[in-house]
Image (cartoon, rainbow, N blue to C red; front, side, top):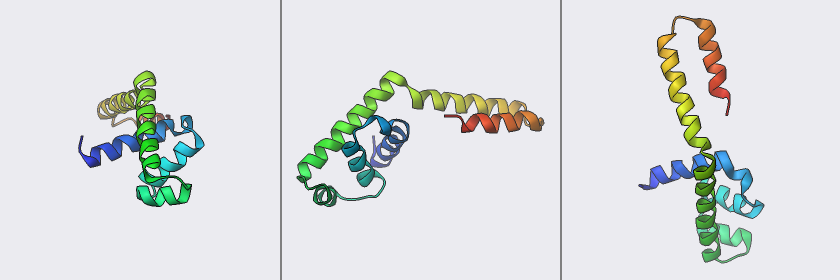
Length: 108
């Protein structure tokens, strides 16, 4: 997996499951993936070693991937969006159905 795809994958996992991480894991992951801090910057903020930050990120990613494997929230959301797109093509003339489909897209 290239760097951009991995970044997008981890971002999707965080959006779905970050509440299941510990507060420390969540903070480190947000600093690294959303704030674009380096491992050294995070280590300094958290008063831990750079290696501890790296290990925490790797363990958090593994934990998030395990949640997705078990719960499949992201996979199901993608399947829902594909079905919605197919229905939208078929019923593009009906504004009521389009409104309902728009509402359905917002449901997580």
